[in-house]
Amino acid sequence: METIKKEITDAEGKSHNYEIYKFTGLQGWNYQIRLGKILAPAIKEALSALPKGKLDKLLTGDIDPKLFGGAIDSFINALATNDPKGDFVAELLQNTLRDGNKLSTIEINTVYAGNYLDMMKAVIAVISANGFFGVTSLSLGNLEKLVNKTTK
Image 1 (tube, helix red, strand yellow):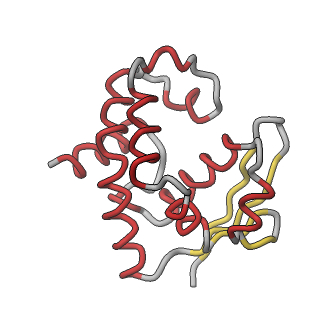
Image 2: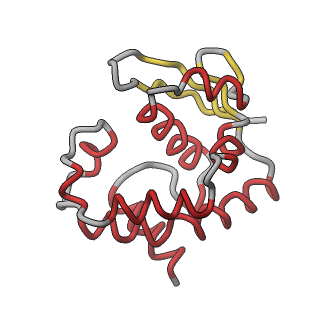
């Protein structure tokens, strides 16, 4: 099985090495459909509120959340409604190693406690590594394509 290696820096500036194993065909398809249903409205609202050219700053945590208006609420509500216990996020991370350790539920609870930016970046890396919705890199244009595909 093909793997994608990625280095992600957490909120404290510490780098972590990730190894992402791609999902099998039907498993990935299922996750892509579930993810689209959960996040498409929130992504669309967030992108429309984001000043042009600011996506890279969002991924590094340098954007003022006030720029999003109600988009943050929409995103949180979408996840809270559809994944209140984080089970789906755990499923998305299950084929991933962080610093050589498999991201089991126990590992996720340990390494991401108070480190949610790192976890969010890891989930985005999994989405990108698996090419969900045809997104293989995280440019603003590709996220706009994702929104257009999941809202049609």
